[in-house]
Image (tube, rainbow, N blue to C red; front, side):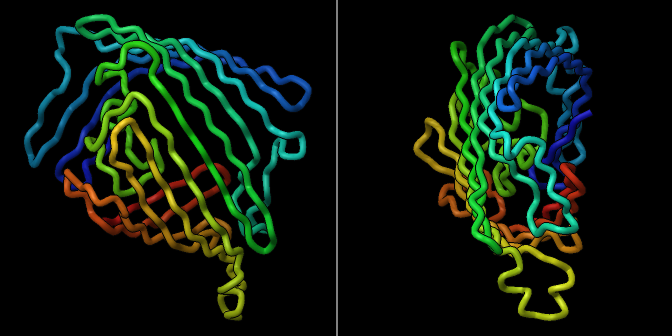
Length: 274
């Protein structure tokens, strides 16, 4: 089951799907890893709930099936291998240096058959200058071949939440549909540099941060947002004030939001109030 909202509680999608992924991981010399995989998905229902009305988006006379076979290549320096910082002893969540490339050949079957290839790559690194650090992430992707609207990078057709896909909080799922993209994420962590001066707050080991996110596509409009907040309170709590910087806002998305999240190990639950 997958769910995502347009931002209004009374307008959202609810999908039912079956999904199977089989993969194999092989590591070489503690630096490189290769992971071939195959993927199968069948979407049984894709319902739009809009102000009390229910509309099925799929024609029940046809099966909606996605198939894919691909390979993921990654490089992680040995010093970063298996990095797992103890959240009780560190102000920062783990961010190992890594370079990753993923390629897949995909087939979508619904009324007609569409074949296309997808290529995505990412790099991430942390620059430490204690007590502060700077996190950098760069992700890009492109659809090779058929780039019809169902085969593009778009939160709408991935049947998931916008924030979980691109890490954006004030971005409409209908805002863009693109065949190539480049996303940047930069976060400056202060590591208690400011709040440690307050004796009562120091015991909670907070991390103050400011971040900037941007999404570049084949369109001229660039989506940007900035966030300021505190995380790692008691090792797992955090909140963030988010501001949308993009001038164009065709779907009337909120300009501001407050995000509260709880992070345990690599799992995170976040609530975003707009």
